Amino acid sequence: MRLIHYIILVIALALAGWLAFSGMSARVVAEQEKQSDKSYQIMVMIELPPNHIQPGSAYSAGYGNARQKAIRKRLGNSIARQYGIELIDNWPMPLAGIDCFIMSVPSNIEMNLLVKKITADKRVSWVEPMEDYEVLASQRTYNDPLYSVSPAGQKWKIADLHQKWTGRNVSIAVIDTQIERNHPDLIGRIKTSKNFTSLANSIAELHGTSVAGVISAKANNGIGIAGIAPSAEIIGLRACWQSTSNGRSICNTLSLARALNYATEKRVDIINLSLGGPPSKLLSQLIDIAIGRNIAIVAAYNEKLPSGGFPASHKKVIAVSSDSESYRISRGFKAPGNAIPTTRPGGKWHLADGSSYAAAHVSGLLALMQECRKMATQNCKSLATQSNSRFIIDAKASLM
Image 1 (cartoon, helix red, strand yellow):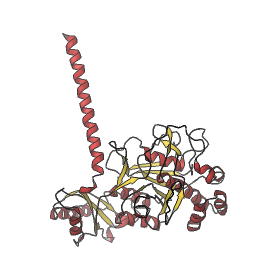
Image 2 (tube, helix red, strand yellow):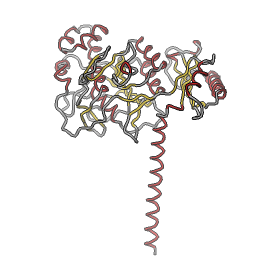
Image 3 (cartoon, one colour):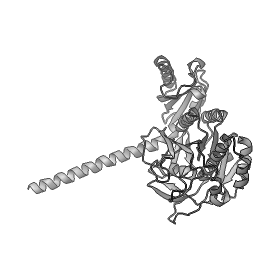
Image 4 (cartoon, helix red, strand yellow):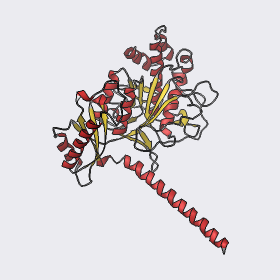
């Protein structure tokens, strides 16, 4: 009888554990999918008074003193009540001179009409719906052995360039999904890792890890690949997340804005945005501020969206598409983006496709140029000649 009771107890505990795990998994999936539910969230921008801005202060959600925060919170709640919506959170962005209030909109309220009404409110600078942005990579997975030489190896003569330039003292913010910091080809390459989504830090994700590998995987270590700028410092900023339901990697306006704000305040040299989506006034302003601080911004070109999608369509952003595509782009460059050997989570490697990786190539190449520019004794013209790349010649003229 005792044996029967014991067996029943074991089965009950196992079932309870399974139910708990299933419930936890369901909550995680629900939370991830909620992140992309842009239809019921808007961002209400309210101007920060000039005397509230504290030059040199670090960005944080707690910007300003307690009294200032309380005043702004009351204003946000007042606007939400007036229009029958709910205030969820707010994120001050002193760089852009605004306080961003995130508000939830009930399904019975027509979104476009609501945006027009709130935009007309004199207390409000502007309103944006929360938009989604998707990383620009193919979902194709290869089982073939890793190629020993990347496409850029011959086209750009990377091994020869590394004799002089490897991206030393150049920082690149990779705004993407979670990067695997302990990957054998990335150990020591990820200087900082920050999470700007509302999800808890997750395990390493595919897209961010792959983009980071193209840019700065270790060179000459006897394994894997060599990045375009193997000595560059990667600032990993998680603004996107990998969905568990369909494998897509997506971001939203707020997470991207927070990551851009952080990268700009840290005065990185280059920002890599291997993603695209609809235009955003908030993101455009932050990009303008970053470029005004001499930060180069590289974005992936999406041929399915007008002008390559945003932020590639921004006139001051370096737009990049895959050189394997036959379509023409009116502004920007082409770089290797097909069958690119790179890193993936789990300490592995794979072949990846998409303009995401073309953009990563150009970010790495820019790092070599930035290093050359910082070394006053170097003749950077030889970099253009040695690379045999139209991109290098054109970009050098605008950056040197």
